[in-house]
Length: 303
Image 1 (spheres, rainbow, N blue to C red):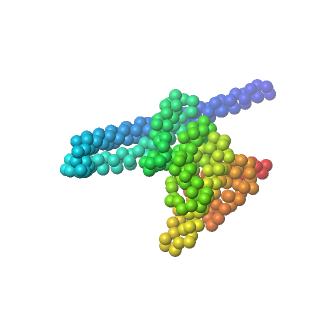
Image 2: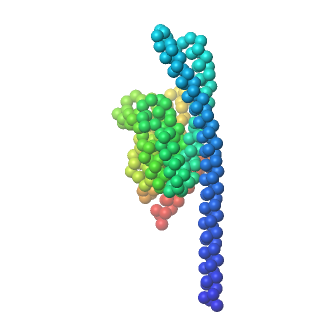
Image 3: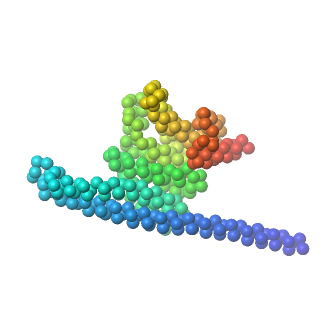
């Protein structure tokens, strides 16, 4: 009887686990299906906007060729009319691009890395990443891709393979390296968008490259702290609180990095600094999840 009872219990347990795994897989499949449907929709919208913009761009090139012997080729009624058409099309394409990019990254992150669809989306993401970071447009595109990837990189359950993929092309480009060099020597520097550097730091962490994650975080903290200190010297009405907020945010990320590296003392130090003059309840929900992850890691180190 005992043996029979044990067999029944094992059978029930196995059936329960199988049902749970099936339900989990089904939920993931539905999530991925919804993400792909959304991607197909916004991709069509963006492609339509881009095609219309490309058409008017070709028209502008034709006008410039026709007027090349004139003193000012980009002038005249025909050029003015083309510009009137071009501007709203350009604004529409620029507005639809981030939505397409977010949907693309989201769909990729919802799929298993080994799937054929994930590989196709990975190639599509790579096509959206400018190789250069010199022009303003390239910098904006790289920042948009980093912003699309960051929420997924902050998710502790992201697949390591996906984190490695993002780390490969989110590596800061030339403009960021120049910016870091200026700050290292404390030379005057205009504040840049730090999205790519932050996303690269988090991608490195999730990929297990902790030293890379820490190195980029140190640079971010140095830059944010410097600008925060500069603004502290301004009259109150002229201060920009953005940099103080960035210092706090980067300290949370640093605490997470140190906790992953098993350095409890350092993690607690940065977590304590980040929580100065605030409470967890007042934080952004994403940061609240990071704090939970940090504390869970710290509990594991204490045991």
